[in-house]
Figure 1 (cartoon, rainbow, N blue to C red):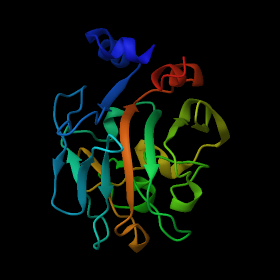
Figure 2 (figure 1 turned 90 degrees about the vertical axis):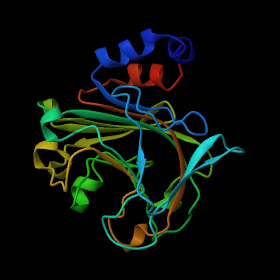
Figure 3 (figure 1 turned 180 degrees about the horizontal axis):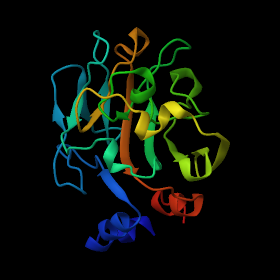
Length: 221
């Protein structure tokens, strides 16, 4: 279903109807464009974001030093006011390269300058970004912050991993940022330095999506 939609303007229109505010397919070499804003990721020169023709994905390497430095930014003006209900959903496909109990990685964040804010939107497997907790194969994950019902949900590989009470640090109204936009590959502490992973099919919504809809987006239905 997802592939059929993707060949048409109708897929983007459908995503927008669900509250999609960013969609990065990262589908081929040179494709850094967000399909919602029409803008592209801007590389900072810190760390790297390089196309891997074997994996058919972008390989991201965190900056080797400096907390809060990052690989790229989507300068679309995003800030906490884009989330009036404090609800959001993130969807990722990622494959982790680094494999260590004390190494972490960060996918996207709302240009934050605190640990809680930087980690709010990032991909999680087994509810964590610790690299050795991820499989060595491609993982399809989603995280839902449902402030309306004071809950959060972790999904992976088409099913539910866990649900829990909401975490106040994730709520957009509590974010602490150093600017607008969405950054990629930002260091939260020294345990993120030089971490590597592959990433594609990244979505951000300012609404709560249910598992059925997430499965459709990820191609399970």
